[in-house]
Image 1 (cartoon, rainbow, N blue to C red):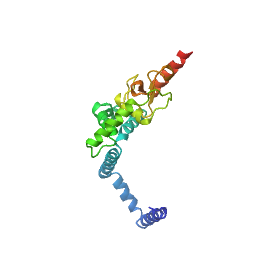
Image 2: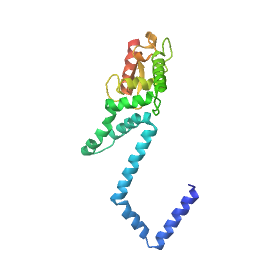
Image 3: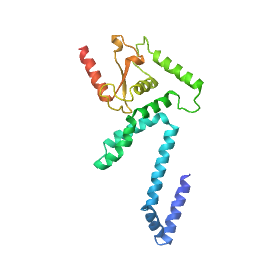
Image 4: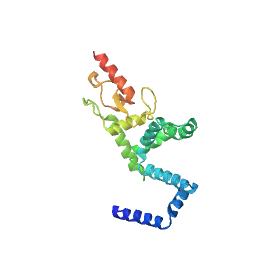
Length: 205
């Protein structure tokens, strides 16, 4: 919709409201405070989330993780927190994690057949075997998510839920003969990753 049309509509509504002595504003206020508008708002929000998760299933875990972190910092009553917590804690359940992992590994799902299963298995095997003999510290985003999914999206140290900005570190450092293989990688939250990095640097002194 062009901005000119929006300005024209707003101007027309203001003129009509003035002509009817402010009755349009009163009607809008009545609708705004009605339960039907609130019900429609909740329905729109729920439908939007459903369509978003259906279209982007691999982002649902990240979405709930960010929402969980954000809500923890918001001031709210204990009753409100108790009401919201069960929904956010769904991301910690194994079934939720397994579902997202299966969708992610199958390339978003849909029309799964023997060819897709074989291709997914080949991709997993290729990822498991990659990283041997490398000296580069960089790890692909795909491998990072694979490592985190294998840990049920929990930090490898403190066992808390991984945030969206988690890090992947080497169990055996590259300079000590380690590699970028999946078996030598661990997903950590920022705090645990920083602590491990600091301890490694102290050991070098």
